[in-house]
Image 1 (cartoon, rainbow, N blue to C red):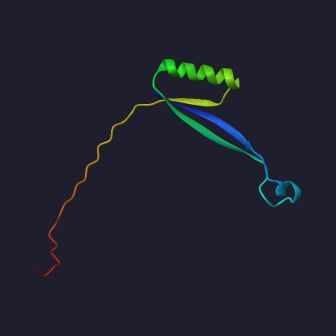
Image 2: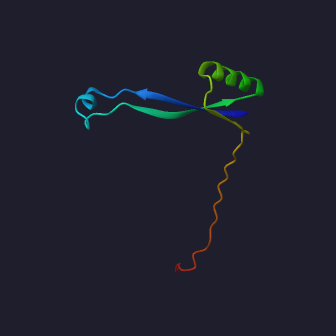
Image 3: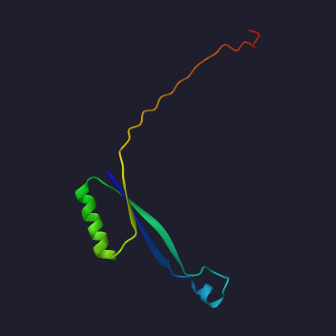
Length: 87
């Protein structure tokens, strides 16, 4: 299994108050974020990377090889005699 992490960004327009009254409202800005996808096999990974390159030219991405882990939960309770009690 592979994990594909793609860097993305989106432009957020500021509101009218920030343009007409600087310091008020919220200004235009760019927000960066990551998209994380699980990919099951080599073939699917190659298709995804090819599509990214065709769509974005030279996209920013990272690929990690991953193994699915199983989890087991165990609860352990122990008791001791309280030697400070009088009963």
